[in-house]
Structures are given as structure tokens and as C-alpha cells.
Length: 66
Image (cartoon, rainbow, N blue to C red; front, side, top):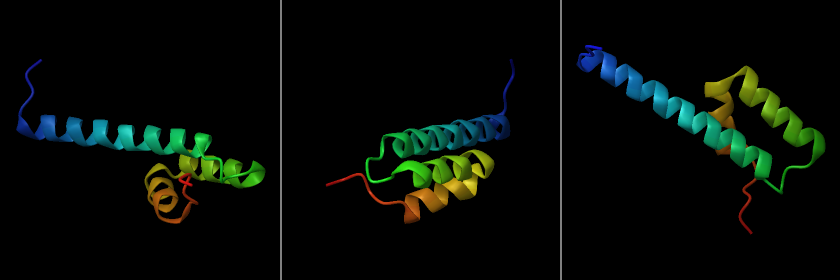
């Protein structure tokens, strides 16, 4: 496997995006401030629109901190 600098950069970007997506999805599932249909809608948004869903969740979702 002979990877050049551009391929390594793309691979790192993909890995980072996947890590952020799975972190956001896990956080949404564990967030106690989201109830029932609200949690379902966030998960649906994350699955249908991963990039925009992650940005919206981080920006607008209620925090799970007390």
C-alpha cells in the first residue's frame, strides 16, 4: 500500500469525521435532557444529514451537564 500525502490527509479527515459522528450519536443517545420524540428526531437528523446534524446537535441540543 503506497499512500502519498494527499491520500493520508483524506484518510485522516474521514477518520476524524467518523469519530465526531459516532461521538455525537453516542452523546445524543445518553443525553438525559432529551426525551422521547425529541431524542428520536435528533437521531434521525444525525443519520439522514451527518455533517449538518452533527453541527446542529453540538450547537442547539440541550447539554447533558447538570
